[in-house]
Image (cartoon, rainbow, N blue to C red):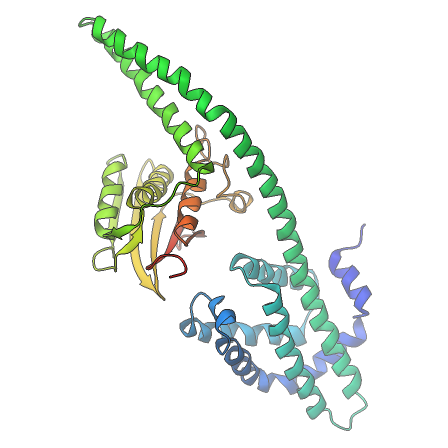
Length: 383
C-alpha cells in the first residue's frame, strides 16, 4: 500500500514512538496551564485589528473558541496521532480556509502556542534529562500540525485553480452563445404574437400557444441568468426595507398548499444599502430551492437577524439536505441536485451576495434539512 501523507510527514519529522511517549508524559504537567495559554492566545489576536477581523464574531465568539483551543491542546499532547487525528486536523484546516484566514496569521498563532508550551516544558522539567527531548517532541508535533494546515491550503489552492479554469470556460461559452440565443427566441416571440392575433377562438390552439410562450419565457430567463453571471453591472445602491423585500420575495415564489412558509425577524432590522432587485432575486432563488426541497409536504422558513454589524438572512427547509459530495461545489455554475435544473440559482446568489460585500453559506439544518445563510454588511462594502 502507498504511504499516507501522515505517515510520510511523521517519517520526515522523525516523530515516532519515543516522541509520543514524551508528549504523553508531559501532558498532565501542561494541562493545568491550557486555559492560561488560551487567554494569552486570544488576547494577542484581539489586540491585532486585522487578525481579530478573521474571527467573524469578535469577542462574543472568543469564549467558545477558547474552549476549542483547550481541547485542541489536550489532543495535541495526549494523542493518538493516527489517521483520525489527521482527519480532524484536516477539518480544522478546511475551516480556516473557509473563513479566509491568511497563512501568516496561522503561523503567528501557532508560534504563540509553541512559545508557551516550550516555556512550560523548560519550567516543569527543569533539571530533568527529559527536558530537552520533550521540548524537541513539542516542536515536532507543532511542525506536524503546521504541515497538515498547509496541506489544506495547498488542496484549496488546487481546487481554486480548477474552479477558475471551469469558470473561465463557462464565461467564454456564455459570452459566445448568450446573445446568439436571443435572436431565435425573439423570432419565436414575434411569431407567437402574430399567431395569437389570427388564431380565432380555438381553446386548444390557445393552450398550445400559451405553453410555447411559457417555455420561451423560461428560456429567456435562463439566458438572462447566464449573462448576469458574467456581467459586472454597477449596483444601484439604496436603503432597503428588509421586511418589504422579504414579502416581495415570498409573493414571487409559487408553492403547493402542503408546504408552509414562515417569515420571522425581518421587522425592525436596520435598512441595508444595496440593489433591491438583485437582493430580491437572492431570496427568490433560495426560497424556490427550499420549497422544491420541502415538497410535497414540509416547511420553509425565512429568518432575519442582526449580528456584529451585519444582517443575516437564513432560509431553511425540512427537505433531505445536500449530500456531502455536492457541498464543496454547491455554489458553482451548472451544479444542481434537481432533475430538470441547470445549476444557476445558487451561483447567482453567491455572486450577488459577494458584490454586496457579503457571503452565503450552507449548513445542515438542526433536525434535518438545509439552511442557507446570507450575511450582508449593513453599510456599503469597506464602509
